[in-house]
Image (cartoon, rainbow, N blue to C red; front, side, top):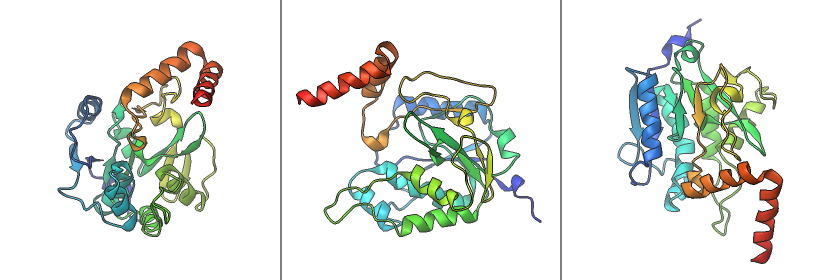
Length: 250
């Protein structure tokens, strides 16, 4: 049997559609990739080398300027055809990924204040031709982006991927699991940042930090920072009460 562990190219792919310049925070993340993965090629994908209208889902997302959803499909298309590593531009590396690459294809659990799922944007790696990626691409090919009125349908890449892996025997638990040729690593590996408070809990097995830029929500960075500060200083319950009062007054 062919050993696929050595077939993962040393290329970090990232997507940046929409034509805007990379924000300073993203540039810092890219610098961390260069620092911890020296000699690894960084390959940018945008409208100059990838068609946003690859499937109806991405075509409609692009038409609405919701570029993060184009990336949701493109990342799997790119890795299926080229192999390598994929990272979202709000992922900061704090250690070399080489120990994980030696073990083969992987993804990781994302644990937030409200959900648990497998998030490909935290970081994933695979050789070209991974069958599970072909299944994810097929899921997107048959998935509408919006309803008849043009309203975006619920769901993110986390739900699409998690649902697909559940069909292959994934258990919804924040543990290391082998599924469909992938190792799914616990949230400690790629998701040590609390999404509500911004507190870091870096452990001995942490390789990266997902900074939750929330570009898919169109939320400016200052709002995320303000919300996290409120949760740290006022506590979760008080912040929730203030949010409810604010909505009531409107």
